[in-house]
Image (cartoon, rainbow, N blue to C red; front, side):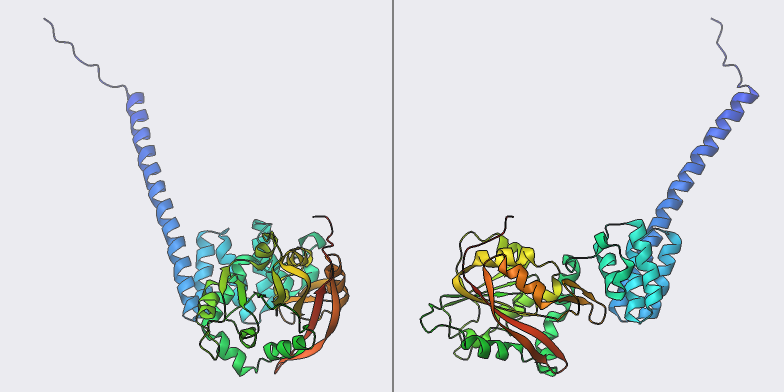
Length: 346
């Protein structure tokens, strides 16, 4: 039988096969290069973050910029550069990067809030923040927890003692001191003096590290300050309550982290019994309503706004005034009484 032979490939066919092979090799090369670039991006970003933790700000800035050279729309690097320049007091450069973040990600809450702390007028009315972003708040207080008491002692923090003395003047001797609710409780500095007055004290805070410190706080008798602690955002905790139980509620310097107070007061009235008292402190605001104050980086509130929002939920202002909270800080301190179950529609 005659053996069949394969016809030699034409020159055109050899050209196509060669081009295909070259394309496949090029594609493999590009894939490998892309992986390496991505790895370089991640490596430089992680290195920059480690430098921040070490306090090497200048080196971190360089590394974040290298990351952006590799990946021009890398939002975390833009945001961190903004924060570092803000830390250095170079506000225009900080705004440059925060603005780039918002342009890339228009709903980036942290960047929007940081712009508000520098110059709120740069934000459109619909973009003005109404609270400090949750993740930012948790990170800040988790990092602060271990030195919080020492810092407050250094600044001669007086607000807890002032609160105790002021509230004592308004508590009815017949009040059944069953439960005190401490919102934004931190390490428990604000309620230590109340432990012998109340059967139960409940604390709520967003920071797990703060709550760990609070769980280790005892009164002079060796009794734990808190009966129970809740790791939760104060507004979410309040609005989940189905039955009022607190004779007294404290929110000492919680409001600087909240702008719009309607959700807060709606929840607070759900937690308090009728005739219960709430002590609230906040930073005074020179305009009507509320807003982020560049001088502090936190929210300030006008007393008229606070009073009107509270009254919508049956909480009547019975006393207010400016007090010296610490050696370098004055705040507005208010006492409200819950007079009814009145509440505006949800």
